[in-house]
Image (cartoon, rainbow, N blue to C red; front, side):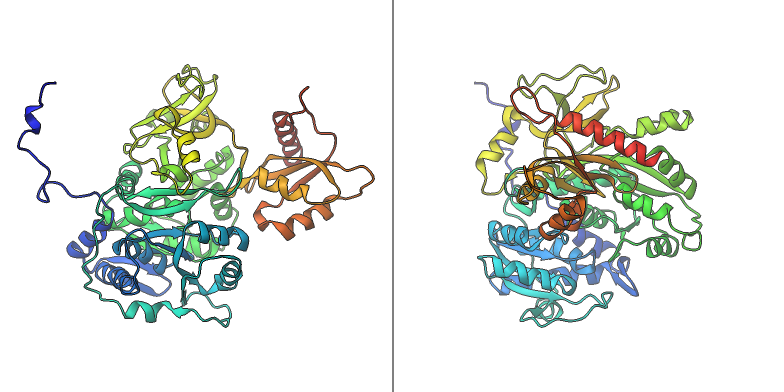
Length: 548
């Protein structure tokens, strides 16, 4: 074998090779623009110098308590300054950040805490009762910290948790934080919705977070000092890596504890917000607000959305209100969005209906993603670019997860053939843009939240009156999609929609409760397999009748 002469006596050294990590973005921002506003939260204005110091204090305080490389720090926080601090302070001591969906039930939270081997849990006071319930079910016994957000006015409860600010104050603001030993080191773990069996822990690495954070800025054309409004929950795929993106461009994080129309419009105008992300439900919330709540904007705001494609009328209303909407697509396993519907200037001259059709497509790969295709999952051959032949959407590149934590079988299956199998079915158009057509995992996306149809079905099967059930997505004008449950009752049993809805409310998070219950014979194949595609069509027809 011939030796490559360019590898001779040209070695990696600390002078020419450092592991990629987004943590350095904050250090640079604080060094170059120390007084620039990094965080806005109500009356709070926090500079980059202060942000960096507090992140280092958190890393120092955690390190003093014995938290280091490979340890898990779980957080259950709203979109607050503390959540931003955790995205830097936790990995700065070598630990791995585990952000918990605040809408989950205690049982699922307990599973995540145990599976992630949590050693510290940081909880917003609002969510402390739920966390206490989860900890009572969990096997781990982590150090518990409570964060008191001044913007939360709810009652205090009795707890033996340590105060977050007191804990932080014990740390060193000049702490010599840890670079990852390798850029392949884990920076975070986020759990899937658990479409089959228990939720899976998606492990992200420093390299991928670094690349996607910059990819966000390049893809969304975020200029230096952009102002970003936090309507997207930071517990979703680490806020699609935007907590790290904002430091890279020395932007301003405008925190918003609750996604409500009035504070959104007020903040858009007062803080001159340039960018925000969210599901179509956020757009609907904004557009449906009263005229007394809405504010006239003197600048165009970039809005990035995922989940179900927005309806044509909603897109038109958003454009009229001063927003430029871009459709993104990705998964927890790809650090959030890794596909963008890159818009062509000449498309803007097309009729609104044609523009809406184009905007409904998921698009093309991010610059930070090396490969995106639609393939036959058995042969691994790309489908024709005809916009009709369906295959499985697959990803390849540095912004794909390390794998599933403590689940080698699921990891091997997901990476079969050298590509990440998304489980989403789609087509590829002649221009290379992909478009989703179905979800092989039967995930329902409601208001930006993933709902497992299997989880809802299992809950319904627990009711004594239910013999057979199938849950599918039903289009919804406000939420994008909502669960629709088809039910066959057991012989001699009686139950109505109200009874089954109450049952689901007792066993599921509120957003997972079906919006419709249909009592009928469920269609099956000759082998007894439920024909969900027929049920989806029936649900779509029902939705059309309701909106007509």
